[in-house]
Image (cartoon, rainbow, N blue to C red):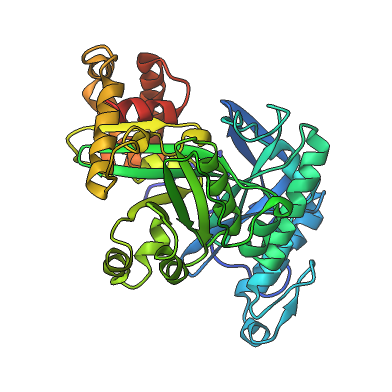
Length: 446
């Protein structure tokens, strides 16, 4: 018989499985799940003062920022959020309207969830941003703050109209309350947004122009249809856009170009088709999403009613990041050109003086425009810069250009996320850029 020497160390307790909490408020359980969140801006990591919690339900995990100041109160707040969405017996509550903190009603416990994460000025102050490309935004201060608001899978950048951080944070909280209480349509109508608008002249090779635009305040917006002929302009333009703020912005951008005159704006395509035959309109700008969701026969109807009208579709993005992620792969070449908002139609401006302006001539004029831009560039300049990258760095940059996040890149290449960070740092140094957008632009222009 053998004897086993007693262990001098305390046996480790088996790890507790990550199981849902028992019914009722379990303070110890929820205290363990709290953590301090952080975010990175301009390369600086900032830790938030408030508590956060992650809640998973039906395969979906979400992070919630809590309003309670101390840990005990934050634990109870986390439990209340959990109870509002996953606890047994809530199906009955889900069938009854629930009044939220901001006065709106909802038919699901999701409204309670949203009201729990509604934040004040103290939450938004460290999240204020200084956006670029305000030179044509009719603002007196280049230090004006902006903020990104996200809700229900949609997000927008809003201009806050002040360079004072405190007042900007209060305005950001006000915008969020409108978004969550009244919806995106109400917020878009009341507050100024920043958007990226792109024209896809050709897809192979990729030749796009994009512009940063800012919607106006409701006080200066025009009615849906405006007929103001300009005798000095060479071509009359009309706009079809459902968003009133964006519709007015496009009309103002076109008016800044002496070659064009925006004589009409429409909210729907049927409305535009009724008026096109009455006015001497030569170019119709139409939102790509609006055109794609309409009846397929509208293009043929446009050619029948107004055969002399050239339709130029455009796409709208939250910012340039979304635009770059949507660029199709596999093209023979890439050229994306940023234009100021007062030169929106610059690629076809040189062709408006001809005796006949058509879709074919506008496409040919756009290609000639890009050729002229490429002529003064050094030969193979972009290729030489990209050639500095290793094969793995080029793979990382290629995935970045398609909108992949670091975790997705790591999974695709079977490497760690820290290795991805190292490759991105090397890419910045070799391409002499400071942002991922700058690196992607150089890659797409190679």
